[in-house]
View 1 (tube, rainbow, N blue to C red):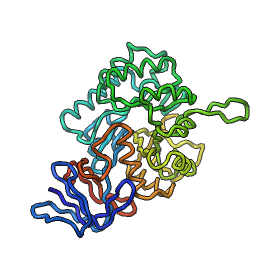
View 2: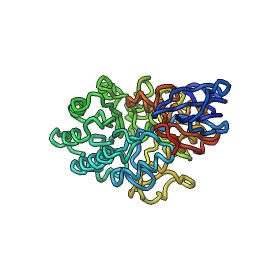
View 3: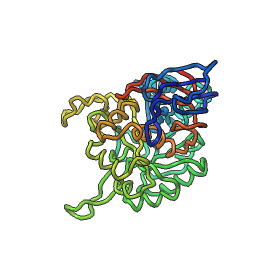
View 4: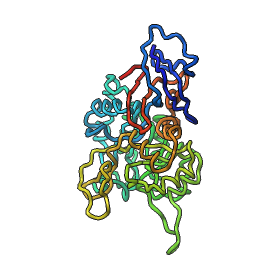
Length: 381
């Protein structure tokens, strides 16, 4: 049994100071106030010394761990993230990979999963194959620009199988509904996200009955359709704001480059604490910093070789710190966005909050969101 004592528990709606947590066989078995802590004979005891005990981070949109793409070495990428507090991750593959490469990279990650080399990997989040080719980093190398073709995409769906948690789609692409239906036939529990898209709200809404409930890196790589000259139109972002059930992913870098801090506060006001998901969108692009634009100090974002912003170098805990700074969100709300909300969005019911019966995947941080300890499956790392 593991006992964590003298902790401030980060619960979904509040902080609970002077508390303890017990875990056994990888599961939280009890929590409570220190004045009621039971006898701990035989337990491994960790003294949090008043610091914050939060649920482990759940990064549902992550291409890499450190300097390693997931498809290159899944174990190295997964270990890097785990030691930095990401106890659940969905490796993300990208549309720049042709069919055979996607199938091969899915298989490589799946082999590592089956061998137990990536215990924090819990499936896939895939920005492929059918997004809008006008949007996204490295889009010059998009091999999926042509018509949607069942013979081309079916091997990809079948290889991902039930490990696919999320498929990102552009609803405006012709015959995208065929792809969505086939994805559901392979895995009835899969979810869909709208991303790299200039769909109208009506096109987004047409896919919601199939399980579209996530907005991929909200306000990034989305178009705006002017209806009349000098009149603002409506597009993907407005649809996300309008529909309470859609979760909005946010890449929250230190300088607010991906999403301006004012926009972050607006999205938080509209979507509320239950529908924000912090993601890293971590990548390993190494293009040069563009000469146009003020990127001084923006050391946690990346660029492709054409100067397009291309993901980040963020750890999810960095995004938590930045979200608190840019929006004023309190710690309970911040960790909700980085653990409970992403868990719910992709169908995980066994993690994401500190509660008896949930997985004992936990982190200890100080008031500045600096990592002090990782607990994975009830064990101190």
